[in-house]
Length: 236
Image 1 (cartoon, rainbow, N blue to C red):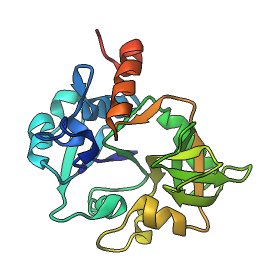
Image 2: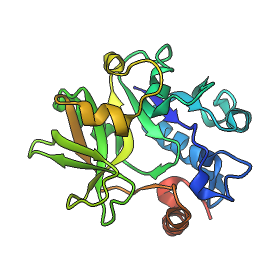
Image 3: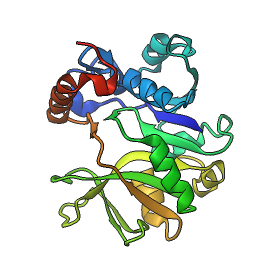
Image 4: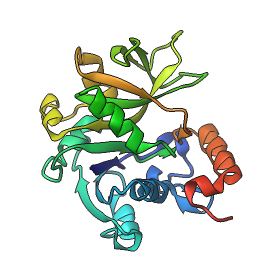
C-alpha cells in the first residue's frame, strides 16, 4: 500500500506558529508533525509516499528531500493553485498504483493502519474513512453509520449535532476511486463524502488522534505526546 500526505495547508489558525513555516512543519515536542506521520507509515511498512504541497512547499521539500534519511521514498506534487483535499490527491494520480492511504499533514495519530486496511477489504468499500468519537464536534465532519459501519449520513462542520463520531481526515481507497473526483477544486469533506450513497464506510478507532488546527489542540497534543513519547518514537 502507498500513502498520500496532504501537506499543503497554511495553518492560519495556528499563527504566529505558522507565520514562517507550513502547518505540517510545526513541531510536536522536538520534531515536525510530518516526521511523526512518516515514521508511523514506515512502522506499518508503507514506504512509498506522495506529498501534496502548496504553502511554502520549498520548506518541506528541503527538510525531507527524497525521504532517504527516513527509509522511505517521497514524491512531491505542488499545487499551483488550491485544489482542495480531494483535488490535491487526484493531482497525484500518476503516483498511485493501487490501494493507498491518505492522511492529513496536521494529524498526530497512532492509528492501526493495518487493522483499518483489513476493515476496508472486508467491507469491500470504495472509500473507508477513519473515525473517532469525540465530545466536541465543532469544526469537524460528523458521521452517522448503520450497524455494519456503512456511512448513511455525512455532514461537514454542522453548527450542532447529537452525533459524536467524526471524520479524522484519514482515508483508504483504491486508484479507481479517483474517478469520483472531478478535475479542479474538490474537497473530501465538503464535496465527495456527502455525495456518496454507496461504498463509504467508517472505521472507528480508539487510538489517539488529533489535528493541530488550533492553538488549543496543538497544546493538548504536545501534552499527550510528552506523556506518551514511546508511542510516537520520541525520546525525551
